[in-house]
Image 1 (cartoon, rainbow, N blue to C red):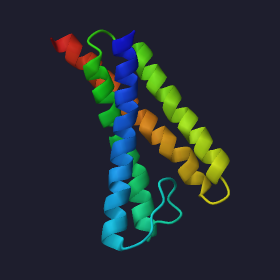
Image 2: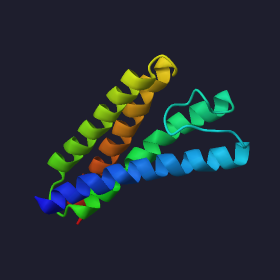
Image 3: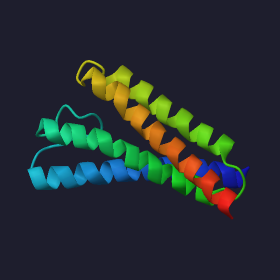
Length: 130
């Protein structure tokens, strides 16, 4: 139980860390004030699309961290991580819904969930080979 909880927390914190780190890099290089959520304040449309697409990688890395901490089948932990991503997406929609584009509010959680699912299936494939 403790290992599973730690795995979910570590996976979610990994997603948050990479998300925040990329936002920090964008704010340093563009010399703009970038908020901790959303894409409306990014300096260009290209950065908006690239940052949203990077959510897939954030989810992939978070899912791999979760799967690697859990030695057994990580179904429950992956489901819990996806529930956290959906919950964060709903909070983002509720609190920034008027300021952010709707495509971002829909696609960002979906891409992160896609990355998490991909990580889980990669872990399943690795377990079948071994």
